[in-house]
Image 1: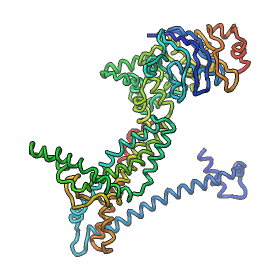
Image 2: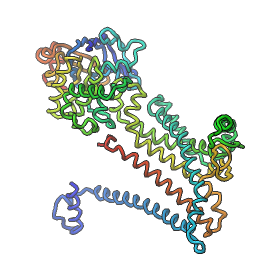
Image 3: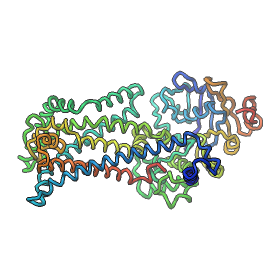
Image 4: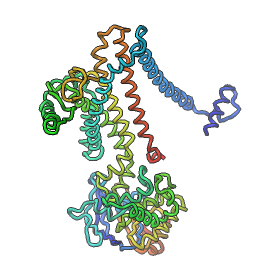
Length: 259
Length: 336
């Protein structure tokens, strides 16, 4: 299921403005990769190009290649809808559908595929996904209640369950813990460690300790100044980035000298 | 917090010059203004209720004469047999208008909010709003001289295939399409005109609410691999549901109460089942045509007022049903 990601000379533009310049990165399947960097450095923008979510803004486009295993997701005739079904995303703020029950939230992706599920099949899928998101025990008695009634951390795990329910190849997480308390954060981090057994996980985080805890490889992004494009400065094993970075900017950032 | 501020206010009222609590004198000037505005808003709300009550009282009081006359006693039956065709006609016209107008209005709103390029959407929105500014007498004239003749071929076709043909071959035709269309001045034409008239109202309410759909929910749907239409079904419609219902109810209210356009488009020849041949009428039309030439205080006059009361009650009932529909799924509204 899990697929690798390869970016080749990827530039991201919003209209005429170049937001991210010249990213070259290879992300292995079944791994956790963290993107770190100061605000506005383009890490979230780059993350969103991995499932073409940046295209919701008018004028957004990319140059270069982005390969999912062998296939260019920006190839001619590729529908972003197809890409997004294969590359799931978890957002900064938990966003379960407020009008749907917990169960329907988990099954939302399935319904999009037009799959006609029997009641028991649907129950199985919902249970499997909720177990996969370590949420099953907390919600099994109230699957028909609205998802918005859960706590923030539970809602975020519900969103993860919704994402894994459709068994994507890659899971992108955009600061998934920034709106959560430490206990809920820990629950999500534990979950990430389990998810990498089956999925390629890419996580953007402002929390450097979190990057150090959950990821195998880390990419550091930085920006030269306002109006300039963000760039990937360094990409290496997480331990190298945090202990012995080769670039001075990275060293200054991870040691807390700026950002 | 709340109890604190009430205490403070109570203290101040008791001893305005010498507050025991230092915080009381620290009240900013804006606090008084805030209280003043709260009072003003409350007064406005009460004022509306009073007006509504006066209308209801006027209608009820003057309707008595239609139901009871000293010499004859209760004459409810006479009023009902007079009133029901108009009540039915009003509801039928409004519902037909809604069936035709609401889906188009919602589609237009959706196009403006989620499909059209930003520049075009502004222009289209402006043009739709302009539709609301056209006086109803103009719509009436348009319905009478342009739409009605243009609809006649359609009425002939409907009459032929939904009434005459099945009548001859199956022994029963749909009575709603019986009869000759004449000049096309019937309640179906009226409902088409009304559909155009309520379109801008429904459309602008829906557009405003569609635009407010949280980006977060739209992106949640898109990230699951939803197409734009699936995203709309998943995120936009559930969010906008109460707003859509409110907009549709506003439109229905306008359709129920519209007078001038119906007066001009419909040539009433009394009640009949057919909606495509001249005949039928609505409550506003009946009142508008007859009120001026009816002597004050006569039974006829009371009947017309009572008709007004019936319309008032219908509108009220429609709005209450709408509120009930909106509140039914409160738990899932996303407000929590």
